[in-house]
Amino acid sequence: MPHTQRYPAISAAVIVCLAIATFYDAAAVLQAQASGNSSTPVFRGAVDLVSLNVTLTNEHNQPVGGLTATDFAVYEDGVPQDLSFFSSARLPMDVAILLDTSSSMAPVLSVAQDAALGFVESAKPADRVSVTEFNDRANILHPLGSDMSGAIRAIKATSARGSTALYNGLYMAMTEMIRSRRGTAAQDIRKQAVVVLSDGQDTSSLVQYDDVMDLANQSGIVLYTILLLTPLDARQLNDLKTSKLSQALFVMRSFAEATGGVTFMTSNVRELHGIYTKIATELAQQYTLGYISTNGQRFGKYRRVVVRVIGRPQVRARTRNGYQAPKPSASISPLR
View 1 (cartoon, rainbow, N blue to C red):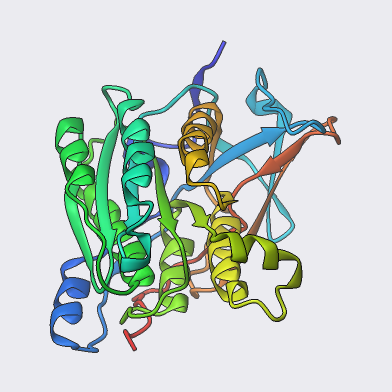
View 2: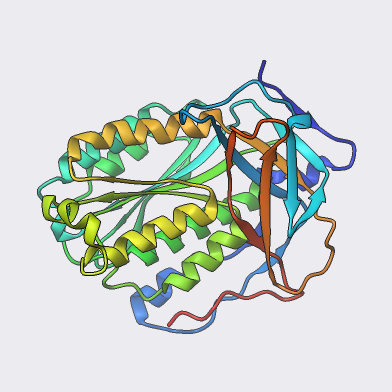
């Protein structure tokens, strides 16, 4: 029976969103995008509870259910950590849907829209969804909320044009999701994830790769990435040293692996519906763990996290690789 367990060591106020409490104003990215301003945005952050969305699979890559808190061991930089929160139940979700609407997507956009619509339609009443498109620029078409009809209208309204501002889109979607935590009630425990579909590498963002990776490491948001290949790209996968696809594949994989997500690749746009369904199913089946780090230092260093299932070596645990510890006065890298 799925269950949620809080431990006496943690107060309800700490477990808001089960995520690092970083707050940053996405309007800075919008303003920089419009004006070319390269000023440094600043946010304040603090780590109390470190949250981990954990996917378990067996040797046949099938999900593993039915475990309890005592089946898990968590290590931070090699040091064992005591769990403060555990849930095997389906928690409410915040999901940002990002669609590449650059001109190269024109031939397949309608099918991609239909697949994203299926994901939205599978949402539960307590879930929230946002919709962001990126082409020459990134635009939040539907802010994070429970109005699924509005999200559906936003997806249907997208059209293909221009280049690919992938990093701008990811950065903007994550910062909007972080901002949503400000007004979240302490009892409202939620998972947060971004699902991004693109057919190529970034060509026009002001935000850089490192900025996106830093924010992902600080926020605890899981990134699921879908790379849509051309038939030629698919044939070149075995020769990535000479393939123009190599950089796009590296970017998509690194974002997913660092945050505990998955990268999907397909050259058949008809497979997108099944991919979105797999992502929705995985999010629903994950375990959620939380702990308060025994390391109280705030020097902004990266801390590596490992989760193991005790006594079951055949079970693989996938979660984010670690997180960026806060500084006394933290700041995001400048937009370059």
